[in-house]
Image: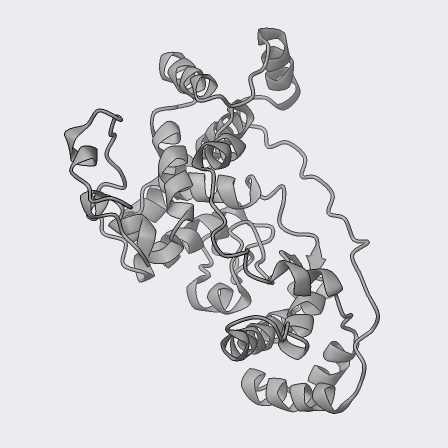
Length: 325
């Protein structure tokens, strides 16, 4: 991935695991780092910085009503997921039976059980469209992207989450070296602290992408192999006596839970941080905290390395950059 020369060291921690997402997380983490829920002065400064950036504002009365409804440490109710995304049942043709064979081998689960699960899957035409790459030359608007994620409400919920889980965030930093502000920011950007964890049945989405990936995609063969691997990992997760009780919801690409981990990353980097004997990234904020920190450490997070440096448009470093950077 491309790194900007003047910020090479600053963004090493971000660009390795998440690429462009690192830019928004740098901003979010920066605000959260200076917005302690127990410090009214820094909290006001944080809110004011967000308002100056052009993010939506609230009146003083609206803010007071919001705090009265939710409290500083109380987590607001999650939005109910929409369960009306469906499609025709997967056809049991030659391609289906071939997928059953491959999933049985990759998941190392009984073939009869794999067949039963895949037989329940539905073809989702939406995910085929959503998985296609954006048109070449599409420019991304950083100001709009930042405004979307960095607003007063998200910061308030982030502060509440950080206060409620301060002990676990500190423990994760001690073990993995990742600051709690970074973990908090990631969970806020990914799912708004568990409020938006996806509305697509994961089995449907991943079966569709493994079985009927768009022919027009420039990296079709590579992506089919990837999604088959994720489907096999999902099947293993579905064997969990608790997780398997209800359909698992995901993004259109199969990312699940508070941290939006793909199923294979759930298995590779998921941490039982609450000590209940199982990794649950859907319902356990503590497991999500430990897992995000573990993920970043595994991808080379360097303890103490800055995530960003503040630059102004007049900074001579920017003017020294070659054209196009």
